[in-house]
Length: 212
Image 1 (cartoon, rainbow, N blue to C red):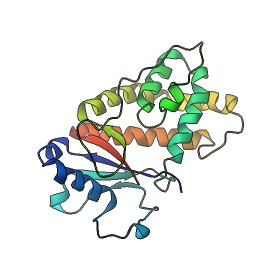
Image 2 (image 1 turned 60 degrees about the vertical axis):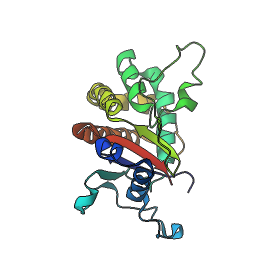
Image 3 (image 1 turned 135 degrees about the vertical axis):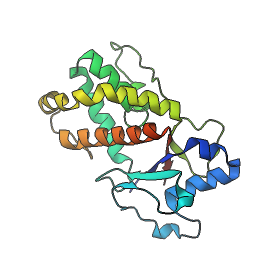
């Protein structure tokens, strides 16, 4: 299965109000369930899309499962590879917005850290980091509310132009390999990331991704 990731949007003010040890446990339980669940029984094929908890005590979080990924990070990795191949054929303004929007989740440092010498270095405006928190589970994505708001501004630039990338994708990406092999799967994953960012930003919440 490889590396998997559970993505949560969380009420940052609520979490910050809890003692460090308690908030770490709260995040882990929201992502994976209670500690008494056997890891061998972990569901790698959870319901796709949004899960909103029923209990009033859990009002502070929601979980998102990216579609057709079975929680695997491979789809995000391959979307980054597709963008790496595609971006040279995209106009500078939408390319810059897409670079920034995708950097925390999809177009990672293994992509932009190895740009060709004839391209200017890229520095993401928003970088994932856990700050002074020390969750029990390895962090893959950690964005505070002000960073989510910044990503939303980039999504506002990306979304109107996303469909226009179909042409260059289909012309220039010949026989792409991996999990993202066509424009439909690429644009779906990018749009789902936009949905996660948009719903978190609308609530003033943070976005957390934990390795599973």
